[in-house]
Image (cartoon, rainbow, N blue to C red):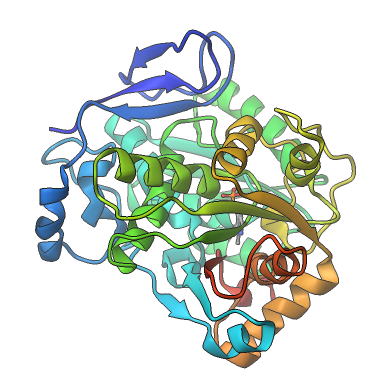
Amino acid sequence: MTTWTLECSACVPVRTRDAEGFPGVCDVCGAPYLVRYETLPPPEAKSLLKRQRWTMWRYGSWLPLAEGEHPVTLGEGGTPLLAATRLGARHGFQQLWVKDESTNPTGSFKARGLAAAITRAVGAGANQFVVPTAGNAGIALAAYATRAGAQARVYAPTTTPAPILKQIRAFGADLQLVDGHIGDCGIAARLFSSGTGAVDVSTLREPYRIEGKKTLGLELAEQFGWTLPDAIVYPTGGGTGLIGMWKAFQELRDNGWIRGGLPRMYTVQATGCAPVVQAFESGAERATGWTDPQTVAAGLRVPSPLGDRLMLRALRDSNGGAVAVSDEALVAAANALQTVEGIDASPEGGAALAGAIALQEKGLVSGDERVVLFNTGAGWLYRA
Ligand SMILES: *Cc1c(COP(=O)(O)O)cnc(C)c1O
C-alpha cells in the first residue's frame, strides 16, 4: 500500500499534513506541497518492472496511487528517447538525445501530470474541474476529465494557436477565451472554482501534477539503464517538469536505484518571457513577475510561475543554469528537428535545442557530454 503525506515546500520548520481529500497549496503560507512517501521501492524491485506495460503507471509504486486503485489513463508515458545523431554532429554534440513527448495522448507531456491529478481528485470524489492554460494543459484536462466521466472548464488566452483550441473543444470541455496571458486566465479560473466548487488543477496549486511529471525522470533513468545524463535542457514555463524530474532523480538516488551522479538541470525560456532566467542570473530566490510576456512558444508564456522557488533550487542544487533564446532561434531549431531528424517539435521543443546550442557556446555544456533535450509537445498543434 503506497501511503504518503504532503510537505510544504517553503515553511520553516518543515510542515507536513495528511493527504485526505484533495488539498491545494499550504494552508499556512500558500506555497506548493510536495508528496512524501512512507516507503519507495528498493532496487531489488527493478526486475518487477519487466512485467509492466510501457505507460507511466509502470512506476505506480512511486506514484500517489493506492494498492488496487485504477488510474484514469489514456496510455500516457512510455515515450521514445531518440538519438539526434545528425543534428548532434551539426552542432558539435557527440551524444545528443531527444525525449519525444509529442507522442503522448493529447500531444504533449501535460498528459502525465493531468492523468495523476485527475486520478487523485476523482478518488477524492471530484467531478468538476477547471484549469487556466497556455494551451496544452487545457487539452489534457479536457481529455482526462472526459475519461473520468467528469466536467472540465478551461480558460485560455485568445492568442492560443487555433489547433490547440480545437482540440480542447473536441474533447468536450467548456472553453472560455481570455484577452490576456495565463496569469489572467488563472484569476478567472479561481473565481469559477470558488463560485462552483470545481477543482482547480492549475500548475502547482495542487500536489499531484508534479508526481505525474516525475515519471519523465523515472523513465529517462530506466531508458539509460539506471544511469542519468550529464545535462538536461528543459523548456520551462510553470516548471512542473523540471521540479518533477529533479524530485525523481533525488528519490532514485536516495533509494539506491542509480549509478553515477545526477544531471545538471538547465532551464530554457524565450527572451520575451524569461522570469526564471532573470532570477537565476540575479541570484534571487524568487522570480519577479514578467510584464508583457510575448513568445510564440505558448507553453513558455508564464510570467509569474508559482513554482519559481522550487525551480531555482533545482537549477542551483544541480549545478545547472538558465538561458533565454529568441523566438527566431527557437522556431528555426524546431524546424531543424522536423526537417533534419523527423521529430515533430513544438516551438518549446525547438527552444530546448536552441538552448543547448547556446549553453555550448557559453561553455556550460561540452560536446562530449550526454545531453538530453525535451520535445515537450507536438508541432502540429501550433500550425495554423
Ligand atoms: C506546458 C508546456 C511547457 C512548460 O512546461 P512546465 O513544466 O510547466 O514548465 C513546455 N512545453 C509545452 C509544449 C507545454 O505545453
